[in-house]
Image (cartoon, rainbow, N blue to C red; front, top):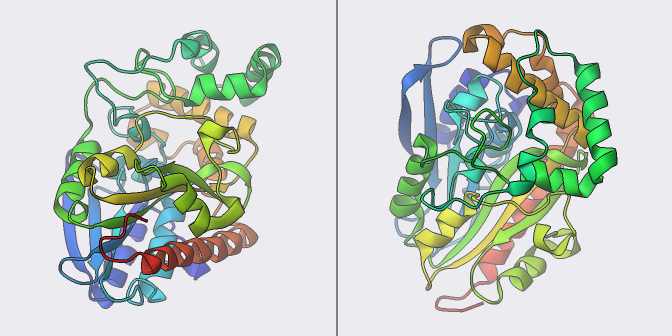
Length: 368
């Protein structure tokens, strides 16, 4: 299974498509217009569906919402759900939908953001009245200093350490990661309009998810928490029992940003909100982010600062070959670490199984 970790986006996509075809999945492809990958190839969101034509219950997994984090998510989808056959073993009346590389540009160019410098997992908001994050204004200049001639990781660490000591680590994390809508050159920027990937995902929700009565949703991420640990973070379901239902499925490991139990502080505009909107008041959603830790938080933040600087000063094809990109690989896809790969695959297999078991317990018309 650990061989499923791809070397690059093109290999990840090819492996996914081959595995999906071998599993008898129904495929759909959405091609990003106006952009090509570093190898000149197309950049695509691919969906693969295994199951009955009109499932009452549906497991949905998403990889690559944050581009470079797709190495891990793709491996889990391709290796566990498709090659190992877990998707085919979902049970009667249950379908499995895999959304692969939701942000293909970021995946291909080793970026967390998309082709418009937007954090897709902060983009699902009302852009006519975005939820401004005033706290970010005070830290922006430290994260994205005005036009330095070169990026110094050591200097960035020193500046961020001073900022953390002044604000406190939790206050700094929430200021940086909540999502912001004023600084287009900044980190965790949610954009000024719906992105292409958002529009694609909303089409997937409307066409392939909305008809299900019960949906288990897992968005696969890396970069937060203890190295190799897969943390299930509650992301919603709008019925009153949603959180307790998730606790029954995922046990005491389940965390919630809003309760202060998670490695993630509260965020706005994430993909699960689009699923909740699409299901409406009658559907039941149990949504989590499955977050795999990689490096300590300060190192991850330095990698993001370095990447922002790199792409302000270099064309994408040049930036992707820079030595600074090794910071992004270490922070989000340490796939050369066999121990980490093994931890990820074991935990993903467990969580996928928990989700399918939770769906199996749901009865037709049951309000859970």
